[in-house]
Length: 400
Image (cartoon, rainbow, N blue to C red):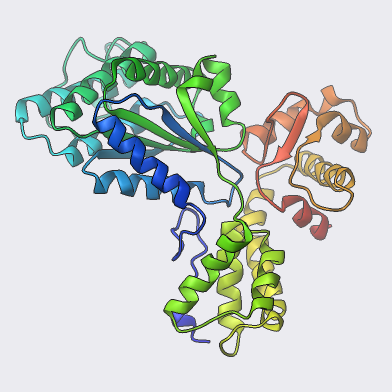
C-alpha cells in the first residue's frame, strides 16, 4: 500500500488521526470550562496513566478545546531539578496574550506581575544580566508575586491572572505535562494556589498529566489535594475504540481491515494507543493491498516490534546502569510469575524483587530510587513497584 498515504502517526505526544476512546473526557472538560467561566465552582484536573496511553495527546486536545472557547492557555513540561518559575512564566505570558483583554493598563499590570515572579528565580539582589526574562516588555511590578516564597507568590500571581480573565468573561487554563517531576516545594505551592482559586471562584484551572503515582505525590504535599483535583485514569483503549482508531483513518484513505486483522491488532497492541499507531504504520507499509488481513499483521509484527524496541523501549533501557537493569529484569520475572504468565502490567512487591536477586531490600534501595527518578518505574503504594511503560517486562525477557 502507498506509504505516502499512510495515516498512522506513532510519535511522542503526536495526535493520532482518530482520537478514539476519549470522547467522555473531552465532553466533561467542555462542561468544566463553561462552569468556570461563569464563576461556578470546579476542581482542577489531573490525568494519570502509563507511558504510551496518550496523556500528552489528550492534554493537548483539552487545551485545544479551551482555545476554541476563547480562553487564555499556556503549557509547560515539568523536568526533574527544574524550578517552576521560568517555565510557568513563559506559559502564563502566552495565556495572557491569548486572552485578548482590551485594557492595556490591566494587561501590563498582570504581565508585570508575571515578570516579577520570573525575576525572583535569580534571587534577591541579582544583577540585571543574571535575571531571566520571559520576553515581557511591561515593567516588573514590585511587591507582587516576588516575596521569594513560591507558595505566596503563586497565589498572588494566579489571583491577578484570574481577575484579568474574569473581566472578559473567559478563563485561563494552565496545562502541565509530566507533573510528577515538579519539585516538592513547587507541588505544594501549586496545590495551595489551586485551593485559593477554588475558594475565590476565579476562572483559572490547572490541568496536569503524569504517571500513575502522581496522586500520591500531590497527596504527600497537601492532604486536601485528594479533594482539590478531579483525577482521571487514562488507560488502554477498549476493543471498540481501538478498532475505530485503526478503521477511521484507513477509511479516509479508501482502505479497510478485515475483522480477523482487527482482532490480531488488538492482541498485539493490547489497546495501547502508541502501539496501535506503531503497528498501524508498519502494517500499512507492508500490506500489499486493502483490505488488510490477519496474515498482513503477522508479517508486519516483527517490523513494528523492532521499531518499538529501538525507539520506545530501547531508549529507556539504555538510560539504566547495569545494576539497574538487573533490578528491572528481576521485576519482569516476578511480574510474570505473579500473573501466572498472563502479563506484567501490575505492580510487584519490592521485597520479592530483592528475593529474586538474592539480596536484602535495603541494599537495592539506591537502584530502585534511581529508577524512580529516571521515570522507568513508579511506586503507587508502599512496598510495591511497577513499570511506567506497558509491555516493558516482555521486552526485557525477549531481550534476554
